Length: 139
Image (cartoon, rainbow, N blue to C red; front, side):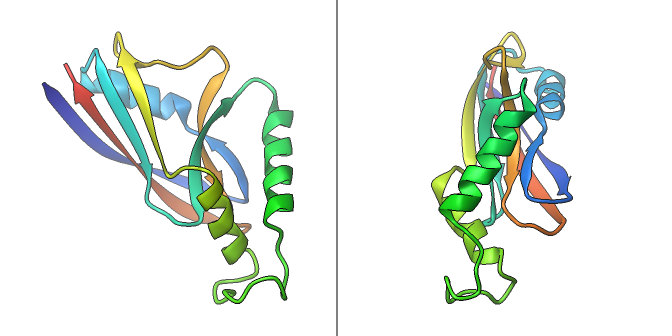
């Protein structure tokens, strides 16, 4: 059994879905592990991870709009606003999604569907530098 670990830095300019599927696939291939399990972990409380369609950009736009309607920004909506009006809604949106993903690996590649991409879902409006940890275990 082998394992490997790395951290990807993802810079987001704004709220939305930021795909990093290619970077992840490249790292998995370089790990030399042919069959195993990949764990993807976001080290933040106001950003999350999702697997979503990567063919039609309108899907990403609609998801962002939906989550903004679920947890809107507003001066009088939340007590926690020390880091800006987008901070508490970002924490709520992260709670509704995931900060970690488990993805099987076969033949040296993550097992994904044809239209599936892996995204950092940035919930803050301002530019952020995010860290995503990749850990693979297998043979």
